[in-house]
Image (spheres, rainbow, N blue to C red):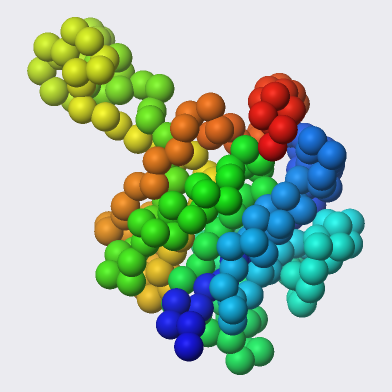
Length: 233
């Protein structure tokens, strides 16, 4: 029995503005959305469900070339620029519940993190346990509030954001992390209580910063594809 039955959710709406058609655009020879589907199918256990949430027929056709991963489409109300990830997740859980599927966790894989590896996903799965809200991939933040992040005071003068400002070497300052958008492993019971912003029990799953590129602009695409080509990813 699979006690940790997982919904592998890949959100891929149409209408991208920064990189038109990015979810079906070939990245190192493979449509972007298919790279995420391939990884989900490789990691999924028996009884799990892999689902591409999309409002686009073009994306649906690309996704189903990998397998039966689009049993229903995402409604227009959850596909706008203002629609939240939480609404997309809850829509998916609700539709699958109607079809007799319930899950203990959701693994969300953004197609726009093409340098994510299967091992990154497995690391995040290992970091998760049912007693937390979420395990999430992170990379070390470029700006550290103990070292090189500053705020202005009432007089308009800069001061260090956190701590006493005595760190003179970055490596001595406490590490700080930022989400890189690659993998989210979320407990369904926590999602039922509220969105990710309400989560308090979150554990990090570190990834290398060189693979933490999120595709927002053509420049991002060019850099990521160059790295991918170099490593034959």
